[in-house]
Structures are given as C-alpha cells and as structure tokens.
Length: 114
Image (tube, rainbow, N blue to C red; front, side):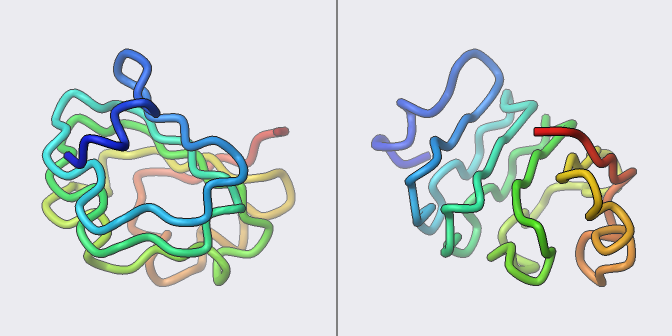
C-alpha cells in the first residue's frame, strides 16, 4: 500500500473523497483487511493493481452513472475474487452494470440511493 493513501482508510473501509481524480498504481495493494471501498465519480484514472490482493473485500460502491465511465480495468482488482463482492451503484444504473462485461463478474449488483 502506498503511504499517502492511508488517510483514506477508516477501520476496514476505504473512502475516496469527492474531488480526488486519480488512484495510483498499487495504491491499496495487499490490504487484506479492507472490506469496503467507495469510489466517487470524480476519479477518472485508476492505476493498475490499485486494489490487487485486497482479498477481504465484500463490497464496492461506485458513483458513476454509466459503467463505461468507471476507470476500472481487469488488473485493478488482480488476485481478488469478484464473485464474492457486492457492487453498489446509483439507482437507475443497475441493469447497465449487471450487463457490462467486467461488472457482471460481481456476486451481485445493487442499485442504491446516494
């Protein structure tokens, strides 16, 4: 894990504040105790392996109205079993996320009011 990202962790959750535009390569890599991540739609770039090895993840919240705008690549969650993670997305976007090639790998997709 990169030192400058520790400020975003509260207990077993990572909260990326709105206004942050980039999550660097390997930023949270190996944080096995991390269970939840919230990524705002201000993030336009996520480096490779940013959350690789975060094997304790059970939920991820994304705030993008269109899954195609979420800057997540196959290697963003390297060595993480996505089929064990619930993905929370904005209301009205659940169908698009469930049918997106990458996001369809998640255990379930739940649309929630944010």
